[in-house]
Image (tube, rainbow, N blue to C red; front, side, top):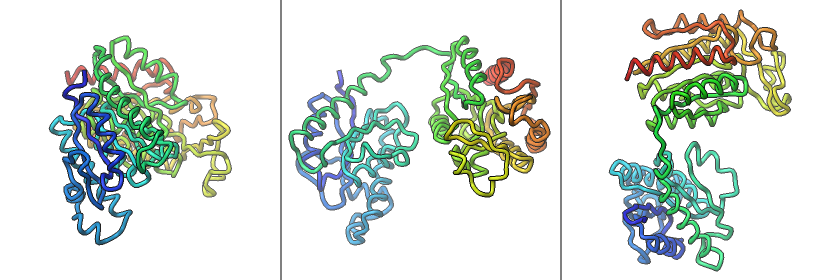
Length: 408
């Protein structure tokens, strides 16, 4: 069943040759093809064929193996070998020669394997058997769908435990390859949507309306990691359109909140040129942790406890003026069809009339900034309702469908 599948095996074949030799044989027993990539700088092995030796990996990473050995700088070597492995994987991907990737190791081996896997798009199985699997590796994994498997014992020679886990890792990876495309469902297209607690009712209504028209809707929680993941998948060509209801991460990035998605938020869809609806959802707030964690310079601002561990700060007029320009500048660079939908009745659930963050005057500063900085050929659709309503959802969905019809 697996014949012809290409598995990439990445690791330090200098110090972990016995372990990788066993993994290689476990994979071959599953009737898959295996390409091997050596990230170890001290040497190689003859226990199995090595397709990409460490000198090739080092060169791809921008250095020479001899220089890495001479420099004796472990941190630099890990960085260069990880980068080189990622570039080689990228080249193999461009030639459709990657069906799955597996690595294993301790701290250094894990770092290089995870760095290499950053080059592999969503949906291609990626597994790392690691001594660090139970640690917080979120920064190294980023927004990738990487499976971490605890090695229990060190990856330092075969034993009764490591043999079991290496066999299971091989079987799990090949099993993931076997399931690819087995549950494909027809849809009218795939749509990315950003959501937050303060826009949840709207997002649920949008999702239902779009699913009724056979669209596949993928919602991303706008807490920083969600925005980063959405942007990454848009860049990988995963979506046909974007319904960006909740751009609150821009406010957190501006003010140092805990939900910043970084400077690249709201840039992928403009670059890809796919239809996009942008809503300034929840730009009336910045997210912090417990009340005591709010920076001193914001202590006298309007604060609201959304949850015991979440404190929201109401954005002021100056911040909204900046945010309007930031949002406009980002979508002005769009290569495709884009429209802005303004919820004149408030930017969030708690920004509605009678709610704690209701302030139409400050909202008006944001709206004016968007109007003043947006390109003349980008439509601005003004809706009288609050964002977190079924009425607003209908307007947002209709605007998106109109854009998609224009490019079809």
